[in-house]
Image 1 (cartoon, helix red, strand yellow):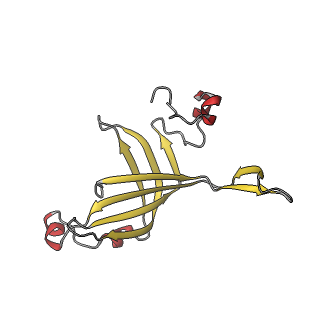
Image 2: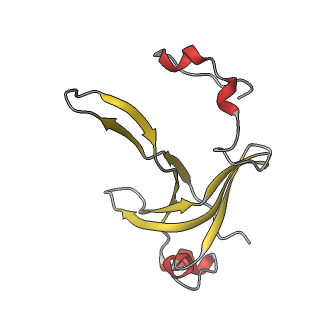
Length: 147
């Protein structure tokens, strides 16, 4: 069931990276990725009561978001899903009020996993093997093969 559409989207992957330090040096001795957190934030225009009535909205959005999980699909220009955020649960909601612009509402969701177009978790894929090891140390944009 399609719940709605957003005007903009901002994905975020937090790896929970922390440096482990020893006595006598300000440099980390080791860097560990301790946890993986997928967040997706959707922004949409906040509708007036008349706009909500036009689109058939009968209850506030937060009542739909509370105690539910969702799957979000990012579609390419052909309408095919290339990334799926699975089991996403609402994390927070905010409204942006600026002068001379429409009100926008942002909703962040924390997802259980992110799947690629083949249904493979981005954490389980071996896509990092396709990168040139030297590219990680260069200060130039990284081009993904086939991307």
